[in-house]
Length: 266
Ligand code: PLP
Image (tube, rainbow, N blue to C red):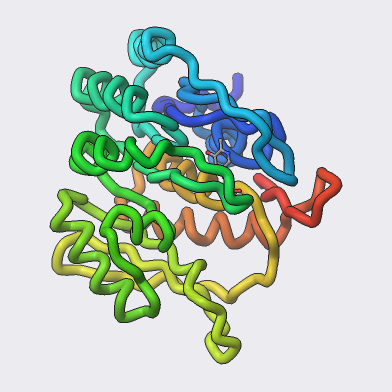
């Protein structure tokens, strides 16, 4: 008989019909780590490699039923949160997490897709800050998301370090701040992400890949959750997840008609 994973990872996130981001990327990432994947759909997008054409948000009673079904039956090692769309959804997810208290919560504060599509109502930002940020074991913002959470610009590496303190002041317990959106100055070959807990910062560097890719944020956060299910520490899980995304990006492919690349989950 095949080895059966003991702990499952649950993603509460949005569906990407194009299979590159969202719940689809999360489940592929869990499977690639040999972790059993569970999913609760918080939003559905009609989407391909060229963009998002429609969004549907199921009612929160149905979302809660999906979450309850997962917690009723599985040993959940970590929960990954992705696209939550509205303040009402965020409130429902926060209520469920406060009820079940999973060991680890990885919060990807999804706001706007690379294509420009809004994945979170602007009015929901406050609920994300006050209800979910303090519940998360780690948050994984990119720079535009951190800027919206903090209400100020992050223009260079020094400002990234300053942003960590701002995120801790908002109640974050640990932060994986993604540096990929810093302007490419040409002379800086690496993308540097910062993993931080209060009083301790670790730089995670990878060579910059000049690729137009889709689903990197979802994959990173779900790889952190998968590694936590495998028993790794939070710091090791974040480093392993960043390595995984770099390799998945290097091996990426183009399934659609646009130039946008989808990660290869190996
Ligand atoms: N679609 C869904 C459902 C997502 O959750 C996300 C990101 O988290 C995206 C699209 C955007 O992915 P990207 O910005 O990598 O294209």
